[in-house]
Length: 297
Image (cartoon, rainbow, N blue to C red; front, side, top):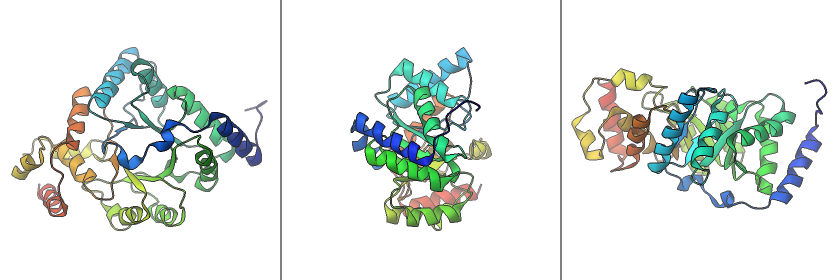
């Protein structure tokens, strides 16, 4: 980092304000997370393919299928290796008109947060992000101050925080309860990892926060566990034909959940996932029945 200018917090926030005044309001400012389709797309691992030409083309095909099936939100992070660069390659091929771009700031130094977010925006090839999140609460207190300034000026439409793997739930609950500036929270929730039901999901719903669910398949472990086992007969009543659809429909039918973001590198799997948005949604009684059926296997 020798020879680089290291801005202080006043410089950082002042620069953001100046940029915001120049940019003005964008169409993203009118987008609501609650109006988006309930299945989005994650990019962790699946889009970290570097410069592999064939793999990049496969990801273009996956993103095309996602858009064709009605998808909007794509979630990434600087933590995910080359995923943001690969996403930029895909959007360059398909256009940016359909994407609701969500990424994260993930750096211990708060002063370098704006620099990292600008780099992410350049990699995606977009004018601005629709949602910017503090990744895994890293340096939350400082980064959220920067994000508030960006949101207030229209540099980003929505702001949020994330956790994963069921970590830091106590701190996340405190933030949901105390921070009125947040539009969204991202957390792990699936048919086996249900700790969020006790406090986080009801609290987020009470506060009007959008809930983005990561790891709905436990990174494929749930699908592997259920592979070869027959679906319960009532699954047909929900329009469910596969276990991934079953697992996703269970997640997105929770009244507090806004969007689930499974990740895949397979076009057929993408279309399979997106089909979970269609057909009847289970009510509370059916969700219990679905849960009991999985636990009985």
